[in-house]
Length: 411
Image 1: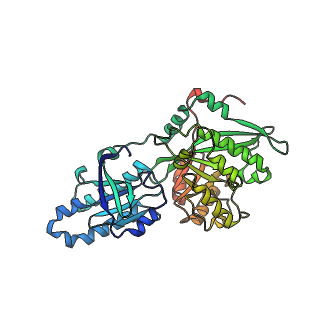
Image 2: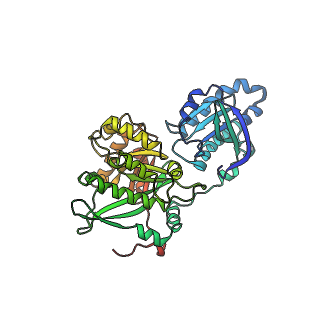
Image 3: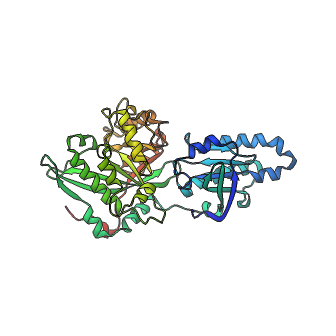
C-alpha cells in the first residue's frame, strides 16, 4: 500500500469495463499503484435534481481532461454514473495518484468553483477479481503535499545506501577479451526523469566500456566485434553492480533500468543469469528491474526478438529496446510488445542543433510504439526541455557523486 492510501478496503463493480480490465490483465500496474478510480459524486450531490441534465457535460469534461493529462496508452473508462477507472502506464505510485487527483481537482473547480479535499474522492485499486475492484481511499492532503526530492538527491542517496568498499570492489572492473584486448567497465547511475511530471521515475545504470591502453570508449554498436563470452562478462558485471542497489524485497524501491545484451539474453544460460545473481533474487528482478536491450538491430530476426522479449518480460518488470539512429530506426522492433524504447544521446553525432534534429526525428518515428520513449545520457538539465519538445516521455541525466566517501579512486 502506498503512503497516500487509507487502510479501509472498499469493493466496487466495474460494470461494462471488460475491455479495460482485459488490458490490465498481465500487467503490474495495480502492484505499482498506477490504477485508480475517480469519483465525481460530489458534483452529482451538489447538482441535485439537475444531475440528469448535467451528467453528459460532466462526462464530456472528464473526457477532455483525460485527453489533456493522460498519454495515449493510458487506460480510462467510465464504470458508473460517477466513477471512472484510470490506469497510468508510465508513472508509479504517488505520481500516478497525483495525476488522478489533479484531473478531479480541475473538474471540481470547473463545476463547483471549489475543490475541497473532502470532495476529492480518488481510490487506489489494490486488486482485481473478475469485474470487482478492491479499492482504498487516497488521502488527498498526503498526496498533494508529497514533494519529491530533487533528482540529484535521489541518485546520491542511492549511492550512499550501499557499502562504499563493496561499490569500489565492483566498479570499475577490468578484463581481457578473447582477442587479447584489455578493457575496463565503469558504472554510473543516471536519474530517469518523467518529462511530464519532473519526478524521478527510475534509476538507470550506465556501463561504460573503454580500452585501457587508449581510454577510447567502446560503443554498444561495436559490441558485435566482441565474443559471446566477452558480452556475457559485461552483462554479468552489470548485474552484480545492479544487485548493490536492489534493496530489500519487502520494501518499495525506485525501479532500476539495466542495459543488457540481446545476445546474452537470447540464450537460456543468459536468462538464468538474470535471476541467479547473489543479492538480486528473482522477486526483485520481477518487481524492480527493467531490462534495456542494447544491441537489437536490422540483423535481429523479428520472430527471435518477439520470442526473447516475451521470455525476458516474464522474468523482469519490463523490457525496453535501444534504437539505433537511422532512417528506419523502429524497423527492427516492429511487432514487439515493449514497455519502452530508448535512445542514447552518445549515438547522436553533430552540433547541438543537429543533435536536436536527430532527437525530433527519432521521437517522431517511435511515437506510439511503446508507453515509454526515453533518451539517456543527457549531459545537463538544460536538455530536458529539448527532449520534451521532441516528444520523449522520459530522459535520464548523468549525476555526479557528491559524497566525498563515494568518489572513485584514481585509475
